[in-house]
Length: 587
Image: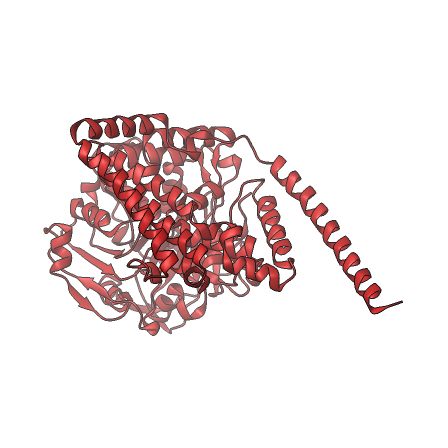
């Protein structure tokens, strides 16, 4: 037998194995896709009214300013020719191209064909965006929506998103004899299987983390369990503690352990080390039995139950409350309710990136119009819940290049395993939302802006933002795309408190909050004059290096009472921190 014969046999065997893997993956792919439920057009695309309004605005532009409309076409062809000539002559690319990490590979500059694709893509996407910007008669809300969907189309059509025009993926396929493509197909099938046929790109290697083992490890005890939450009391690390306890209400869209990812950046541990008795709410991950739960259930069996338990355990009459994101919004509702019934249990409130005035919906404008809200209504009517994957997908598409297409290229084209990153693990550990609460939030708070305007009906009361009158500190984040700081500022301005402190942290929705002083990373801005418009407040604000946490601690201490002997949480049959609710995965 010759060497050639041996080689041929080896190749044939490998081909047979590859064919078998392809067959198995194809069967799994078809099975996964068959499990996909009927699509809901209401949350897949805008309603027909947006297309109609856009068409009308375009024709109005054609009739009133035909020169501009013609100029768009002429400009597009001129720039297309420049792209072609530039690629042939290998001239310098346009401004900003070198900073676009999608085209960082050298072949996007060195290969004439790829260079042309890149240049032409930039010409086309720029023309699309300019055409939307020039629709002067389109109402601003509709223009924001059209701009968002135009951006999504432009991001989707980038040439690096396609295997045939992605030099890195093609090179990897050649280097691995196609193994990267097989691994990529396997990653794709696995993601579809994990989400009942829906495509949601996995961002993290979740096998690297285990809640309670190497993440969310601060010692404590579950001291209360209701249908809506578990209340955790954390073990003290000082001999004495401040008398007034802190009760933290994290958002229920994700899990509470964003505040306790690891010891080095744990806000919970940091507060405990500074002599505070800390309670944290761990919200339930709802199933269909909680489909009718509303904001009133989160308040009654969450906020009020936790406050009463913390008071009883510590023997204090008041607590210092903290609300993050949607829990900050709901803490504000709770404060209005407590004022109306004459309950002074909350001594002070701290709000982390909390929206209370929705008159300007910011980057969420595309998702808060009536057609999309109607689509959500249809979605929750199917099972009574808004599935976690719907929220995850919505959030991801706000940063689609970084959270959708970039990870998809690495996973499906390059065959790479997602990174082991604790923050992304937490981000992917999202929760379902009760249908009733979802619609209350979308229609009553976001659409009607009823709380800020003083007519939000809940729990037999009409709740008003102006009734939030306890001492408060509001922390916002400069680049937050979920709760824009200017929108948070507007809500704080409308609160009735005479003792308000507003802080603007650098960075975004998570990093701006989880910003331990030991990192020396992001600074913050302060300005005591909250009568100013947001832009003027920012212009006159003082910048401070480093985390805002020490500022907050200094603000809390005068409101935290005298020092008393440390309180160790009593052992109960409810189990140790981080509890059981946090470990329930969304179906």
